[in-house]
Length: 291
Image (cartoon, rainbow, N blue to C red; front, side, top):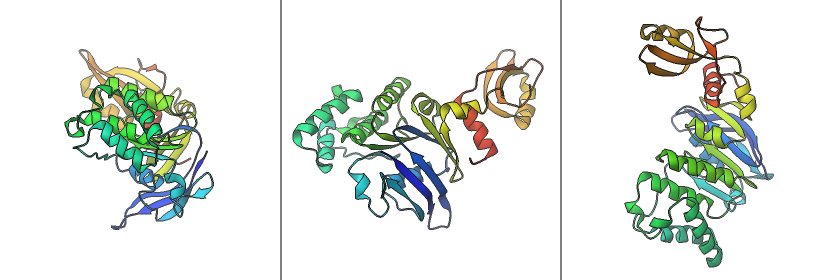
C-alpha cells in the first residue's frame, strides 16, 4: 500500500493558496503532519480524504489517481475531520450502526467491529447514551471509533486528541500505534508529543509548503548539539528571546530556566541537553528550509 502525492496545490476563491507544490510518498505506518495554524494541514487532509479537489497536482492510492477516481480510495478510507459532527439524538451504538451501514458492512461484521471500537475508545459504559449528552472529549473518541470502523487501509485523522484529557490522549495514541500495522496512517496535529510518541516519519508544513519529510530520528538528529538549558535573570529574558530560538521557559525562584537552540553556548553556565522532536520542529519552522 502506498499513497503518492504529486505537486498538490489548492487555491481558494480569494486568491490565497492553502497548500502549494506538496509532494510526498507515504507507505505503511504512521506519518505525522506538523505545522503552525494556517500551514495548510487541514487543506491537505481534506484533499487526501477526497472531500476537496486540488487546484493543481494529484494523489495516487496504489497507482490509481484519487482525484479523477475518488471511489478507488473511499472504499478503504477512514477519516476523522477536525470538525466532526454527530447525530445528537442517536445513541453511540445507533450512530455506529448507521455508519457501518453507510460503509456497506454486513450485520455480523458490523456488530463485531462496533464492540471492538467501543472497547478501544473506552466508551463501553455509555454505548446506550445519546450523543447529545457526550462531552467534547467523548465525541472525539466517537470520531476515532467511526474512522476505524471499516478497518481502513488508509486512515486520515485531523487533530484526533483535541479535547481529550492526558489519560485519554495516551489511550488514543496507543490505539493508533496498535492499529498502524498494515495500513497507511496520516496524523495531523499541533500537539508535538502525540506525533513523537506514535509516528514513523514526520512531514512539516509551513506557509502551505512542505519543509521536510523524514524519520523522527533523522529530524531530531539535525539539532543534536544545538540544544541548551541555562538559568537567566528575568530582566535578561527579552534579550535571550531576541538572540536565540527559545523552545520553553520555566519560572524559578532564582530566575528563569530557558531551553533554547544555539550553535554555541548562550551563557557561561549553559549545558547541553538531549534534543526532542519539538526542538527540531521549531528549528525547521524558524529557518524555513525545504528539503
